[in-house]
Image (cartoon, rainbow, N blue to C red; front, top):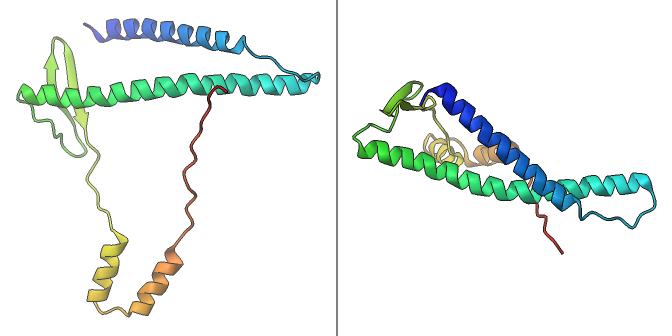
Length: 157
């Protein structure tokens, strides 16, 4: 199938999914009710209610499609490797891995880099004879606070 045909078909699918999502959100929003007589308060509550419903819907979709996306990447590698392809790719280069029936599977791996673990650095400094107090002071001065993760949760009563 040609790329233009694929783009058209996937575009139609995306539009249909978006319409279905909007229909679902509209149905959920139809249940909104407020006890307030203040129009501004009602508008704010309606906005929050709509956003909570969006969060519920998009959380489900994100989880479902993220899993499918990750599974598809693993399967691309597995099936291409089963066909004898080198699936590792090369750093900094886009490499064609396989092609089947007009579709081409390519990979690009970022350039290789380095990393330094603080523990390994401290060990090396100790081996080089750097005074332990100096290392401890440097480590203490290099510490920065790290805010904990925030997890959102929206659910019905």
